[in-house]
Image (cartoon, rainbow, N blue to C red):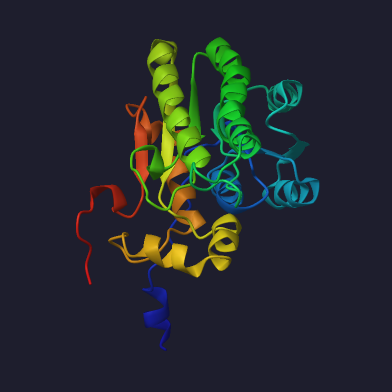
Length: 269
């Protein structure tokens, strides 16, 4: 390669810095979508507060992205309040709340097989936690006159499945409705609230579920027009958009990142 050729090579794509100076709180930051989002928001300049029940994973992520870790059980109101208070006390603001923690346990199945305790546990972690996080985050945002809340719902909040996880589906429908309501209620105070609705994502949670039941994975994959599951980085990119001013007129909506599942009737062979 000549010196002239080397000099004309395209430079690396510059890193987008849409979130410089903003504080982002992420629950479920220790793995999967939360981990990918912590990395993405930090790369865009955000000061990241990593909340997770897993101290080892959460601390590792916080150290990697130069943020702080707060151990939190998202079903505990006091611990959730401490998470957001710590973010505000440390960095002076709460600009982004990515309420992402969730579970999808194997005992959540058809309504015919799912027990009441399994139902309640999923509702507590997936829906009640979002209520608690919004309740804790929004007062800080109201005082600031700005903020973006992003709640992890799912494409299943809009669609039915014969391979049911009944409490998970119901909880994500609740997240969608809650997000829409809050987005309308607080819009004129500079606060946007959106429900992020991913399709199936290649995360440890999904891999564990499908490793135990390959047929269930195959039945889902055939319905995705793109022919694959999403990567966590792709969902993180959507979170970064919703967190930034680039999405300043996106509010009270179900933001689908599902590879086309919800728009499909017949998929390609």
